[in-house]
Length: 324
Image (cartoon, rainbow, N blue to C red; front, side, top):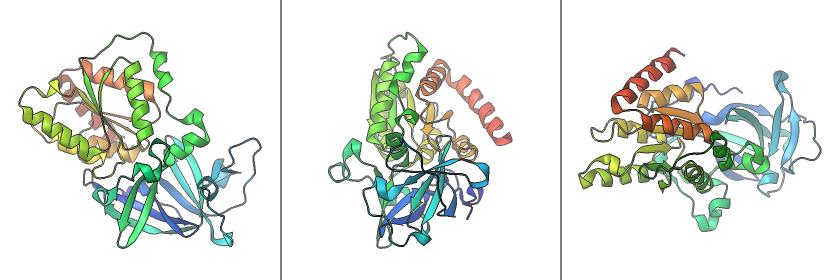
C-alpha cells in the first residue's frame, strides 16, 4: 500500500502531525507519516554477514535494494509467532530508505503536537533512549520512536558527526552571536551544540521543543532591548512534542519584533514537499540531517546578511521552492 505524502501533508504551521500506529508484540508504537513511503507485506530477505544483529537483511522491491531492520529484535521484544501478517514499513528520511519489520499496522491518526509529551528521561533512558515522545490517542498510549537514533546506532557512519565541522578549517570564535537550538532528541541536541562550539559559536541555548523556544523568545522580547542581544539565529528540528518547527517558524516570522531573526530548519524530513512547507512558513534555510558541516555554513551565511538582504534571499528561495 502506497502512502502518497502529497495527499496527507497538513497545512503549514498548524502544529499537527499524522501518526501511523503499528504494533510489536501487541504494544503500540508510532511513526510520523511524513517519513512513510509505503507499507508492504513482509517479504523474503537476503541475509547479510557481519552486520548489526537487528539487520534482518536486504530485499529488492521494484529494483531498489533496501535494508530491512527487525524492530522486535532491536527493541529486545519477541518475534511474532504467526508472522504471515507481518508488515514492512518503508520509511524515507535523511535522504535514505529503510524497511522496518513490524507485526501489524493499525492505522493513521491526525493529532496535535500538544498531545505528545516528552518521555520521562529516567524511564526512557535520557540520551540513550529511543522514544521521542508518548502520544495519547483516545485511551491508547503510543510510543513515538526515534528512528534516526535507531539508524545511527545500527550504522554510526550515517549519523551526525561533530568532527565533520573540522573540515571547514580554522575558524574564529564568535561568542558575540547567540544560537538558540530547539531539538527534542537529547543526543542530537548535544551533538549540534558540540558542533557549533567547534565552529566557534560558543554561546548557545538549548531547549527541548518549539514551545520552550517560543517561551524563551517571548521572555527575551519582554526585556525591551534589542532582540539580537539575546538570540542571533534559531536552529530548529521539525518533529518536536508540544510545538513543531513549522509552527515555531510561523510564529517567529509573524512577530514584528522577531521576524528578522534567521531560522534554519535542521531535520531528517527535508523532502521536496516539506521544503515547500518550510518556505511557506518563512524558514530562511532548510537542511537535512546529518549534514552538520553544511548547517554551520548556512548559519554563517545567514548571520552575514542584513535583515533586508535576508528578506530578499528568502523571497528568492521561496519562489524557487514553489517553482520546483
